[in-house]
Length: 260
Ligand code: ZN
Ligand code: FE
Image 1 (cartoon, helix red, strand yellow):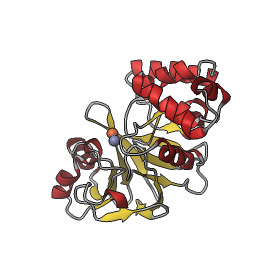
Image 2 (tube, rainbow, N blue to C red):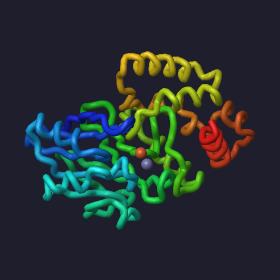
Image 3 (cartoon, helix red, strand yellow):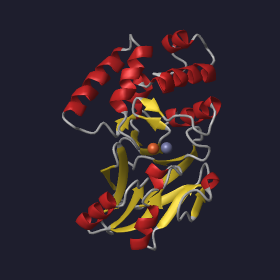
């Protein structure tokens, strides 16, 4: 039976690093290691060896610890997007849409999700038989209540990328790389005022943050109901952006958030 425990580690001011732990074989993989110290501490505590680094994109707050981790675990394999070649320190595997990566005896499927950067990828572990919900590691593409800024991609690319993620089952756990949820929902309320699910979520997140609790992972079903950047086809948002075109609606929402 494959066993994969997911540990969420705090890094920098608002980043999360995810450590995927195979407790049977005492192996582990990390997703987007921003910093080495929290990863070393977690590995030591678990008594596990690092065998893989999964990067979603080349930004420093996602690959910053690759070299330090490799210095201590030289056999770890570094995965990233094919189009990130030359931008991810230590990268050995160049992934594109539909490729698979096996860690902790579980197989992740890769999605190309350009927009935040031109080479951004996401890793999706489908649910194990008999369990509800798979695990999506989406870096800075989809956030809880929001989405990444468009640094290298176009709104059309981002809509296509988010469409792929939106098609996953509602029970999917969304492991995004930053704790931006409260701010994202505050913005969401300015464009999607009469959404009661959004209001409830904002209240829940506000109290969670007051208790210093993490809001990641979130659940894709809730994102579909409350995240304006997955809701370009909702009449309220089309009205606010004065467009029925998905790309234009999305682009205007993204522009409003950038200005907010
Ligand atoms: Zn980024
Ligand atoms: Fe980031």
